[in-house]
Length: 200
Image (cartoon, one colour):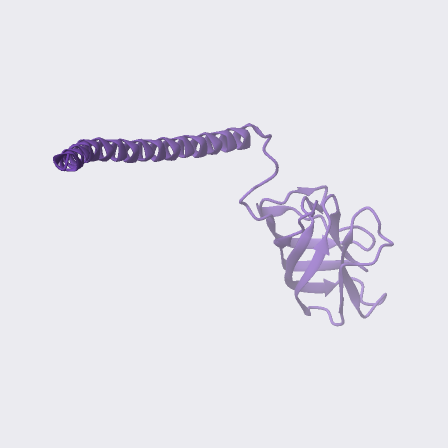
């Protein structure tokens, strides 16, 4: 009877030894399953991210292209010739992306514009006036406030302006003189500094 507990303990040890490899195999298998699951989740996440990127690019390319030009609107004009009182100076462009129509500069984008104007004014009618106003204003509304105005006191005086003005799209602007004059080597440049962006 005394040998029976020894036999039982030996049997118990043998069963424990048999169970240990089985448990090790089970734990190893579980670790493998966890690793496989992590690989699957990672691969699925990568595919979902790739699919989202492709959808985003597809939608972006299908949208109608809005006016997103990398070109900055600008114009450069050179003019020499006669100007008549009450008639806009007949400007023609020398270069740039802003167009001129019937002597008017066509503004296509809201924003701040840098304006540079240089030249010489020679009065043709000295008896009538001893000064002349050179005005930059809207084409359609001659009674509207001028964007810029300079008085030339003496015949042959140089005009030299650099300023910033805010212009709206669809505004046409022209250059006017208050009396008959000869304009010599006029150089007018207009460039968009910062476009106005509508916030939605």
